[in-house]
Image (tube, rainbow, N blue to C red; front, side, top):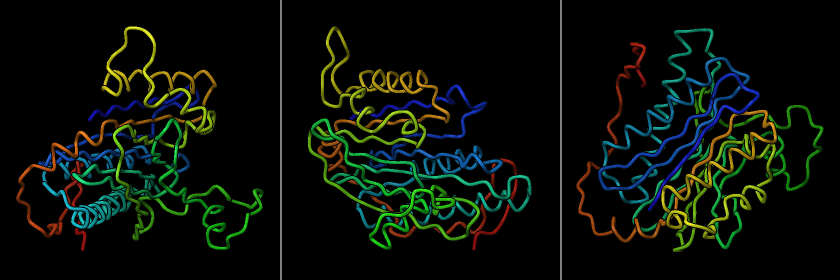
Length: 288
């Protein structure tokens, strides 16, 4: 298995409100995350980083490998992350509306779990084509899904997000699972890239499963996919992308399954409820 990611503020933004990370739990299962702070809300850069760091570091302390337990744990931890964002906002009115999208994936010994809230995306790259695994939670898409009919693209606030972390007490992640083939690659990205590169153009640059000419790193290795991501980000910057850009690739997922399937782990079945959360800036609050 190999995981690589790259994030860039882009030529039009003064800072990077995206956050990205990869973390392994005690069973050797990787959790990858991309969060995109909602640019219209002050403090959303902090929100994105809080979500990635909170879930990532908590994942490093457990050893789950069974789908039902992992899903329940992630729902619980994402809810805690959401509450921590709200808690910071309660103590600082300047960031009371900060919010962030989230897309995550966990590679287990027999399948891959994917979840998202917002418009950050996960794609399955198979046979040099991209299949979107996530749903973009916008007003337009939600109305179309509910009615089954196309919605007027000029609808006011059509692209406004309907799901995210922050602002609201309730968090509703949307889930999907798949069993990867040997040659599959998993691709996570914030919405910045699609503003200047279609998904077909992104796949053309990444060229999943295609060995590049010349004396290059092994196909699917960390260095190999890092170079592909670098080319992707450079292409977006060359087109003057108006947003931050973040992309992550995971390859050789079946190799991970073969190795982790033989691990013996012991883990408490019930997530421990966090009665009190202590934040980095020394804020405290109950999360009942």
